[in-house]
Length: 103
Image (tube, rainbow, N blue to C red):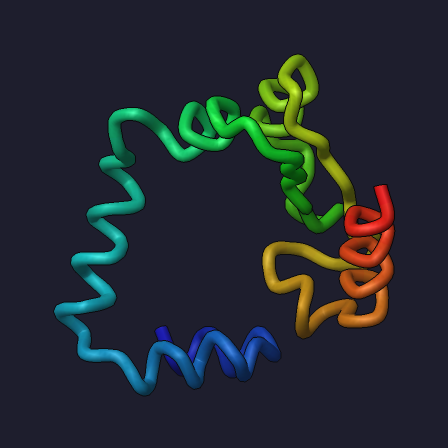
């Protein structure tokens, strides 16, 4: 997995994987697949504070955007980035975070 991440140019993910015990990566993967009750989305929607979820445009389409669009949770998109927005487009992410904080 580390080699694949490096081959894909994702050195940040490769570094995270290399610094993690394989059993920890496996447990994390199992937890992510299993999900939780209530889900992260249900927990987020139930909060009574301003909140926004930021997606990278290369991660779209995802059903989560449509599910959140019908809720009180804001949705913002960072262009030219996928899941790793902070490394793929740090200036774009900073701009979106700044605009969320000004709202």
